Length: 196
Image 1 (tube, rainbow, N blue to C red):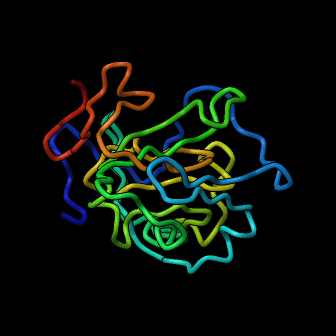
Image 2: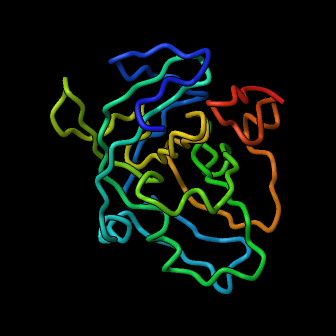
């Protein structure tokens, strides 16, 4: 599936900037990341806690519902599976919601995802990136600095929450921000699952 252009998409070398609401202004003193929901005990991490976790470097194709796709981008970040080591999930967890800042609300944006496809090297909370035209650099505030979720290429990029604040573990699927507005719950670009 790597470097495969989904139907209805065109390839770009740029990383277009699209977002909803205000750009979050990072404050390390107040920033936190919660692991909550169907867990035995909630965990809260500071930014330094997050950056002390094992790092993963992976090339992940990006497919935006607005029809652009970008190949050959390499990210550095924390794999979602590393965060699973910090909590004990209750029996029956199948889905998550990844939350992010939206117009001053730390949990105003969310995207729902099934958990199982997110356990590899291609589901990362990223802070750095590079491609053939750019050396390693921090993601910009418009791209989600200080930490942004990049999902596997089997999901449209709106599932890639910017300015992340936490993960809620769920026993059933539940619509997130764009899904509540009529976008697909599953969002597979290769099946053109753009809208419900």
